[in-house]
Image (cartoon, rainbow, N blue to C red; front, side):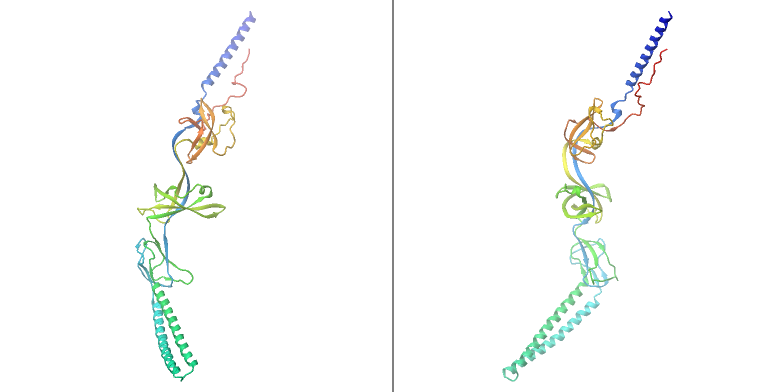
Length: 389
C-alpha cells in the first residue's frame, strides 16, 4: 500500500513539473516581442529625385575694373564715392597738376626756341644755295647749311614729341572712369599721395553691371567629372538664409588648385541679380543638379547600411562589404528580415533610387535594430530543476 502511495505521489509531482514547464514555455511564447518592436523600419516610396554636388563659392561681378593712375601726385579733388553710379568717361578724381603743367610750359618754350633755330637754318640754306649757284661758295659749305637745317627739323620733332608726352601726363592727372558701372571700392582720400613708380596704384574698383554676377566655387576632383556647362544650380547666402537663388554652370576652368594634396577646380556659375540684393563678396553655398529621375522607387540610405546582428537571419550570411550599384537591403516580411538584392541609381544623400530588385512601394525596409533588453534564457533550459521526492 505504501508502495502505491509513493508511486502515485511521484507521478503527481512529475505531472505538476511538466505542467509548470509547459506554462513557462507558453508564457515565453506569448511574451515574444512584435517584429515591429525589434526593427526600425521605413517604407519604400515613389518620388522625383535629383542628385547634386555641393561646394562653397564667392559672388563677384562679371566685370570688375580696377582703376589706377599712370602718374604720381597728391589727390586734389574726389568726384566719386562708394556705391555711386558712374558713366564711361566721367571724372573720378584729380591729382595736383602743378608740376605737369609747368613741364608742359617748359616743353612749349623749348619748341619756340627750336623753331627759331629752324627758321635761321632754312634762311641760311637758301642764301648758301644762291651763293653756290653763283659759284661764290663751295659744295661743302652748301652741304653744311643743308645739314644744319635738317638737324633743326629733327630737334623740333623731338621737342614736339616731348610736348605731347608732357601734355599726356598732364591729362593723366584727371582720372576718368573707363566703364559705366557702380563704384564698389575707393582706396584714396583727398590729400593722399599716390606713387606710380613701379606699379599702378589702385584708386577705385568699378563693377560694370551688378544685375549680372558670377559665382566662383571650388569643387573637389571627385565631383567635377559630373559637372557640365549649362547644368542648373541653386545657392543660398547668409544674408537671405530662407531663400534659394538660381544659377547656371557657365564654365569649368581647367587650372587646378592644390592645397594640402587636395585638388579642386574653379567652377563659374552665372547669376541673375535683377533686384540688386546680392552683393560682391558674399559667400555662396552652391548645389549643382547633376542627375534627375522622375517617379523613382526610392529607399532611405540607412537601409543600405543596415546589417542584421546574426549571420543566420533568413538563412543567409550578410557580406562585410558591398561595393558598386549592386547592393543588398533587408525587408521585413512575415516578421523576418529578408535580404533583397537591388541595383541602385542616383542618390540625394538621404534616399537612393532603386533601378531593379524585388521591392515594391509600401514595403518596409529595415534601417536599424530596436532589440529588447530582456534577459536571455540560459543554454541549460528554462531555468527550472525538477526534484523527485
